[in-house]
Length: 255
Image (cartoon, rainbow, N blue to C red; front, side):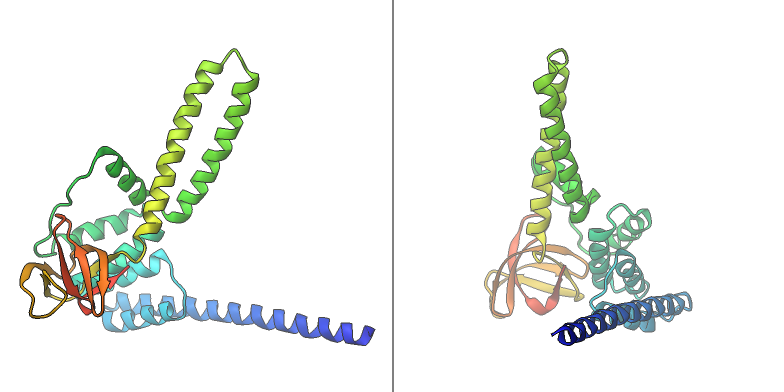
């Protein structure tokens, strides 16, 4: 019996060690690939750099810097749609990176027919501002911290009668921040797989999801749209000016 237990422990240890080695080897491979791709970028060999960056992503590995570098490669090739797409993915992971923000705005200036976003009410604008500044992971941590602060303040409010007015004000402010962060987190999660970028030079949005339907408006490479419905090989999108229409799925890439 003891022999069987020792054998099980041995094989379990072997599996754990082998798995750890594979993870380490894969990370080593990804790091070396990333450095090689960076070298190709410095040599202005953007096609080869893109190929290697995409190879890293195909391994299931991603990072803000990886998407940022990939976006830069596409920007150098003046492929505005792919550049914007990867910058958007990078913003989800490193939303406060100044270089990313600068390059993103620079590429946007080349997008033909780009439209100003229609402003919503003050709450909507506030939530969007929070989403632009914080990633989903950061928002989750922030919500947990605010909740702990809220509980601590409630206890202080219960036992400290002399400072109740001030503590009550802070509790209200903390609760307001908590609600805003919760709404921003829900908005971020709801937006996953509902936003897309036009990756072809030009496409037509139609009133119905058929090729023969009447064209409603044009979309140009690099434009961001929101997906609101799907049907076969078509998606219904909402443009930034709130116009909606049907376009073929192959003309967009979702992020």
